[in-house]
Image (cartoon, rainbow, N blue to C red; front, side):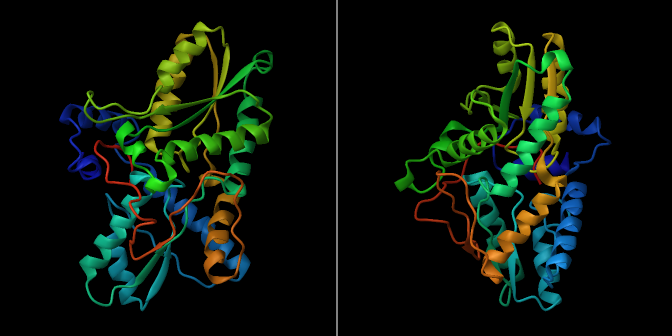
Length: 332
């Protein structure tokens, strides 16, 4: 509960919603899986650094639970670090996906005071070829995991974390017309579907929270499964394209709630793996670092704008991503 209170502080999430989400954690030992997942990613990145001859230490800091980013920045400074690149475990634009990380950087540097290390946040990577390749292979594996007699007419459904409609409307610089987060999710889904030969697919949302009177991006994955079942769909593969690793939202909202709903409806269900454990994800991090220290040319597949590379918490662009109302319990 203290973790969830940190996640949602100031966002108006009802206490009963926090208590409901806390019960989800208790199914998995009462601990968020994110720290362990991030440490696995860090170990993979360190191996890729060694293979590439990159001599950089890797530090780990969280927004909502230990190790807190303020403590990490202080430790970096004590170790003599004067400049660092910051990799966010979010591929997206928008407030929660990008701007909030800039706020974390400002808060951590302010907490340290004069002499804080320079922190350069790496760019958004929702359409990086390595991310798309990892998701595409995961989709193929999920299809192969369905019963043989159910593979010929499978429906592909992409999910990402829902956010308030108002927050999406203000995501990105005004010159881009808003909706940057949902547009990036749609573009990543399009790229993954094309890579796996799916001409038709759905993009839906999951894990909404916050006051019920606030509109959020819809449809919800569980509701959508009922719609698909009504249309005669008998097999579904769900790809959590909005998540880089198996956050609680993935293992609870998809592997429990959505899978249970599919079973109730008589649908075959398979969930594609997230890319965090795929070696290509660590290589993606190395490529993003290489764009700053090794002259590596940025690689992008999509046509939707991407931003995110900023120094010391500066905004990505003028007017980019207003702070959001609502909450996203489960994130670290």
